[in-house]
Image 1 (tube, rainbow, N blue to C red):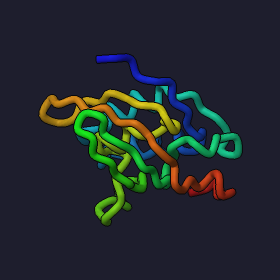
Image 2: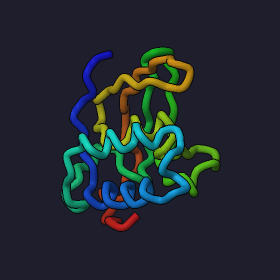
Image 3: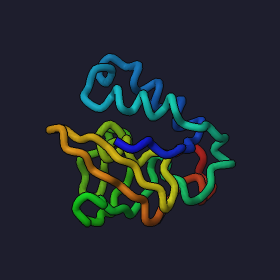
Image 4: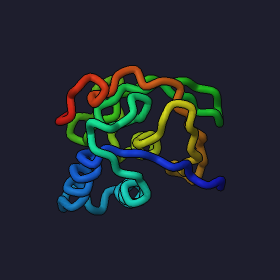
Length: 136
């Protein structure tokens, strides 16, 4: 597997996601370890300093799975907000893979069943930080 790209995350997202993963309900869920790994390798920045082309929590992103050519548009949300059409939980394989990527970056990602996908960010359609919302 090729190396993962450098990722940037809001320090607020990192703190909130660490608190989420410390909760008993989420601690041992599938995907929790992958999310922890992503948080540990992220370059943290203040929410006001997050570039507008970075996928943050509550961002809507258009991306392609280069392994099969499918393009999707999803909003990256916390687990309790997932389940609605057009959303993906940060604990889902695709969600944790997208978090922190910037437009043009791609990442190889192992999904359940041992299959590997290759996600590439095409566009960040909406990002709370770029709209002055640093608390979402």
